[in-house]
Length: 207
Image (spheres, rainbow, N blue to C red):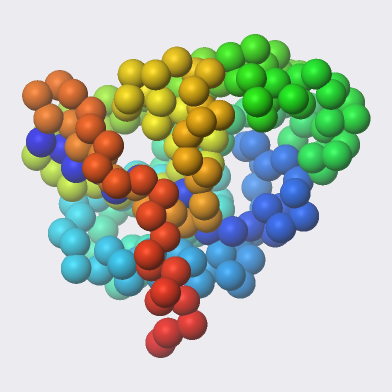
């Protein structure tokens, strides 16, 4: 059995101002760093074999804070990066909506219909994200792994694990900053054990 703890990066500067990040990067806020450190405290008594992270810096920084002082390798993976938003990257939500209100609405409410402006579809994102998860499970058939990724990556994986269509992304739980999810793969089947858990927020502000 492979056990994977999956988390989103901590809050970023662009999250705060509602700017489309995609594969561009913005730094973790002070709160985002605290969220990542709290996640590390939550995981400190769990034996983790290795950490995989999106190669986006905000995810790598979260992985480093969550690792703490443990001697764990962090492997950066491009296929764990957030959805490629093409020409929308860096735009405020309001600016992206003004450019193409139909596709902006599809992005948030009808992902199966979303046509990107130079980026990738939800289907393309799910294909690469699920492939790397299958590869991680294959490489660590009896291991415990921490994976740090992004909000929309996590949403597409949620419906993948549950064998649901892309359209069901809109009904999946909101992915909170530095949230913790847990999935296991056993006998070839993925099972969601825990999702969008932020109990560790209670550690924020503690030494």
